[in-house]
Image (cartoon, rainbow, N blue to C red; front, top):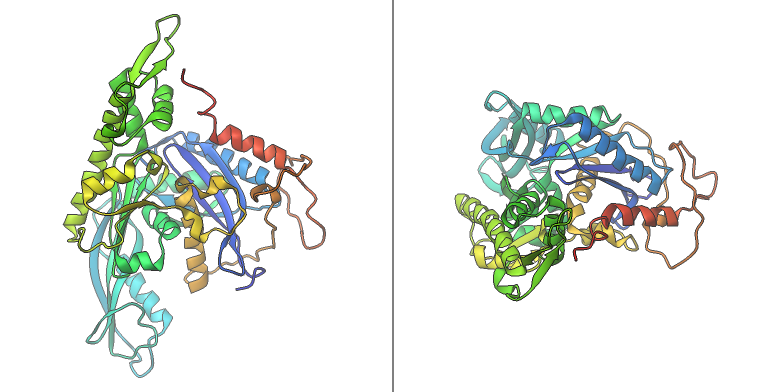
Length: 459
């Protein structure tokens, strides 16, 4: 696929602590070039569910403003949106169809019809099917077929993994996106998006569990023998750890978050027993001494609970340390806790590593995007390309060519002038050179958006 033919895909990650919008396009080497990037602090979302629609809309619009400032030539109309929350459930089904024309090879439209038929599966009232994912296909007596197109037979069928969610929760997400003047191209389960960003084909073959530790939830996806075997949403995340610290140590939420990030550890044995953090007193009250050891004990207790859920789900589907040779891949913002890999290996008995979305990113992009907290958003872009390349969905609009702005590339210290548009306009960049340079502005925005907490030092 040539660069000119590649559409621009936008991922929108609506999380409990942040909302991120990233626009990307695959280059001629199959890597993602980031064309726009914006982030805003999230409000109105709790445990992955949109509760306050107005606050969520404001956060989405702020993320879009930041995205436009990083590249004013962008025009964003459609987005792939991640979904998570307590309400997410999954079930296994099996379905088949008798072919009308058994003399010819199986065609793509027949597989699409087979998948679409599964959307008629009975689910509890109030729920809605989010996605239907085929696992293993079979044609007549031939079992465990990954792709049946080109086979010949009378009957074709498959085992399916069906993901459902609460209808009202889905409606709230769609409403927030619609009222932000965007169209939801598709809803994608967040652990599946994260998995596509941090996982390779080798991981799928070996058997691997992806644990995306977000702000409000921790999302699990398990792959074995090249297919998705299980998904689950664990109702605890980084916000729960922060609240535990706030209550356990009697500090403000902002202080608890800063202590977690700067001094936190997932293993209390690794924390120094004689180390203390000094918290300024409120309104003339004396300063408070916080033990680093106590801080680590609180973090370890909550993280152990999350990992116990992981072990439980793996046992439910019969996959343990002997089956998952690829171990556990940790991603999401919560995966950056110190010593989390050691705690994960100790609790689950599986090898663990941090999953970074580097493999799919084109070189020379800003380091911020390579952090695990953006795995979901980048995975949403990859999901869009999967739809595009397999022709499951039509891209009706003609996508224009947009260059990667220099502010989203790693650059040498080169002075650039600042110019920020008040409103994104349609620009034919093939007729004139890209003249707007705004590195200084973008760099300042990154400092404001991502290092705001670090500026508030704990003395």
